[in-house]
Length: 465
Image (cartoon, rainbow, N blue to C red; front, side, top):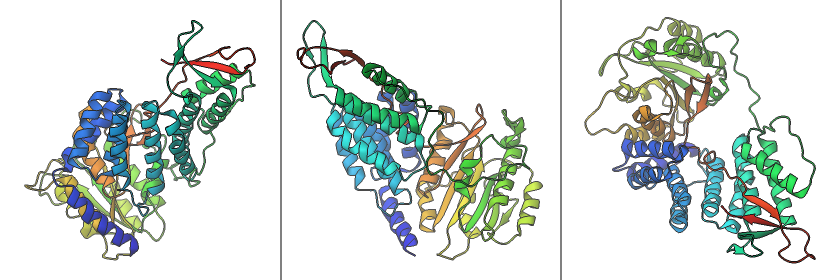
C-alpha cells in the first residue's frame, strides 16, 4: 500500500508539472542525448534546455541539462540546475541509489569541466560509494577514472611558466600515487576502459612502478540467474537484460503485429522481426515464476481495430498462451495509444500486486487522439501501479527520434526499462541517456622537474592542454 500511495502522489506531482511538456519534451531529450553522445555539445545543450523548460520537474532532464551546461563550462548555472533537480529525488524512488549516484557524478563532472578539481573529489567519491551497491561495473570504472583524474589535476590555481618550460602545474609523488590507486581500481572494474588503462600505465611508467595485469572484469552483484534459451533459434546473442522484465506478480504481453514486423529482418539472426518477437515472448513465458499471472494483447490493424488477442492476466493457461503465440499472424499498423488506453483492463484490481506491460515493437504510435498526449497520458498507468517495459527493434538514431521519444516517456514515467536490438552486435542493449559513458578523461603530459630545487626530488609538472 505504501508503494501504491507513493505512485499516486508521484502521479499527481508529475501530472501537474507536465503541462506543456509531453512528447515534445521527450523528443528534445532524445535529441539532446544523441548529440551529446556525438560530441556536438552546443546542439545538445539547446535541445536539453528545451526539454528542461518544457518539463522542469523531470529529474533526468535536470541531470542531463546540468551536465550539458557543465560541459560548456557554465559551471554556476549547471550547479544551480543540479541543485534544483536534487530536490526532486525521493528516497522512495525504485532506482534511488542509482539516481543518487548519477547526481553526485554529474556534480563531480560539472566541477571537473569547470577546472574546480578539488570540489569534484567529494561528490565523485560519494558516487562511487553508492555504486558499490549496484551491478554496473562499467559505470563505476568511469567514475573511478574521473576521480583519479581529479586527484592528479587538483594542484591549485594558475599554471605558472618558468625555467623555459611553459605554463604548468606542480604535482607531488603522493598525488600521483593517489591517482594510481583510483586508475587501477577503474581498470580492475572494467578492463575495456581504455582511458583508465592509459592513465594507469602513464602513472606507473612515470613513477617507475610494476604494472599489474588484469585478466578479466571484476563484475560485482551480477544476477546469477540465467534465462533458458537453448530451445530458441531466433534470439540475440545476449538475452540477460530481459531478466528485468520478469519479476512481477502480473504481466501482460503487448505485441506489435504490424506488417513492418515481417517486412524487416534482424540481419544478424537471419529471421524477420515477427519471429524474433514471438520467440522472445515464448522465452519470457517459460521463465516467469509459477505464481505470475500472464495475459496478452496485440497491436495491429488500424485505429479502432479490435485486437486479435486480448486476454487478461491469469485467464489463459501457460500452454494456451504458448499456443496463441505460436499462431500469431501480422496485421496492419501500430495504433499504440488507442490500445494502451485499454490495457489497464487486462490487470486485476488488486492493489498489492506488481504489474507490468511488456511491449515489443518496431514502430511508433500512428493514432492521434484530440487533446491526448501519449507522454502525459502515461502517468495514469503509474497511478495504477502499472510499469511498461519495452523491447524495440529500432536503433537509437535520428531516424527514430519520434519513436524513442515515446518509448522513453512510456518507460521513465512508469519506472520501466527500454531495451533495443543492436543488429550489428546482435545484442539487446538498455537505452538511456548514458551520463556516465559520455564523460571520459585522459591525463595530460607529465614531466619530472626541479622547479623547487634539488632538495625536492619527487616533483612533476602537468602541462595543461
